Amino acid sequence: MFIHNAWYVAARTAEVAPGAVLRRVLLGIPLVLFRGADATVGALDDRCSHRLARLSQGSCVNGNLQCVYHGARFNTGGECLEFPGQEKALKGADVQSYPVRERFGLIWVWPGDHEQSHDESSIPDFLSYGADPYIASDGEMMGFGSDYRLVVDNLLDAAHAAYVHKSTFGSPIWLASGTDKGIAASEAKFDFQTSDSGIAYQYQVRNGLQGPAFVEAYARCKGIEPDYQQPLDIALEAEWRAPGLFIFMNILGPLDGSDEDRVCLTAFHFLSPETETTTNYYFRTSYRMIDRDDVFGEFWHQTASRAFHEDKAVIEAQQENIGTVDLYDHPVVSYPSDQLAIQGRRVLDRLAEMESSVTS
Image 1 (cartoon, helix red, strand yellow):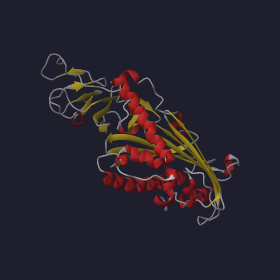
Image 2 (tube, one colour):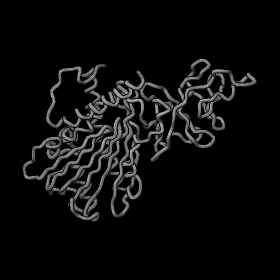
Image 3 (cartoon, one colour):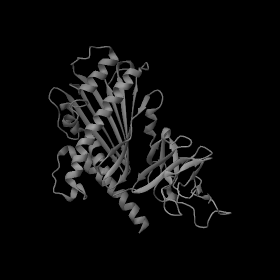
Image 4 (tube, helix red, strand yellow):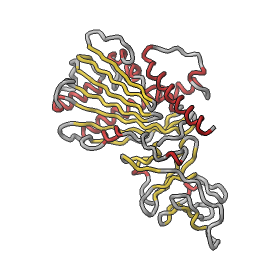
């Protein structure tokens, strides 16, 4: 189930340098991305109007895309400018183009109704947390062999971290997230808000034993021995903007302290459905400290990347068990901590119903 009327990440800005030609599949639509003579990015159907050859096998010539098969040239708007051997371009030779935006170092494509592409609310302001004073790093695009909704389920479920992420973020403190149950020897607080466009949730634990990655991050920042094992306070602020954008902001140290006392770590997730059972998964990490520390930034980025690959292994195996139907076509049980994932499915269902009612 796809939501078409939304902006999706199709590539990072650096992937579409002048002269580069890039193929991506978005919501089942094969696209070709390239940069025009005016430096703007074009997104076209990846098939030539002549013999349906892949335009992504072609090349950029003076900012126009030249088909590898017979040399037809197209601009970023999909207009066929030239067909070798003809005095002028052939009638009906234009190729479908898609609206494109470049924001926050990312290239976004709108695969739905072009007349609605003025709505940029699906490119949320929280992405500014990847800019100064935060120091950001982009990860490689990860291909998930799963329905993007399984990844949304996963990211709305903090409780899984206690088991899936034992080597990184995992700790028993996450087991109470999404429930009203406390944690022994800790003060835990969970809250969430839903809207038509997504879910935000907050989780705080005082005086709790954190996962190894958070402990090491705090120790590195404070110059403490890496085997530091004392309880810490943590505040997680997470937001999902449907269909597939997330920010996780983890604040370590005294929750009521100053910036000098706390470490702020963020992770962004960009989910772009490729097909019904595959997803292009982009991520970005950033951190905020008093002084820039590139060694620490690399530590945090590699740690987060390792955790996301832990999710990938579990979710892809889950997809194999589910098959080509929906998760809820199977008889499954739900735990109290599943409430956000269930709410998330309802948000996506409502968005899909709204699109269907408009087009029917």
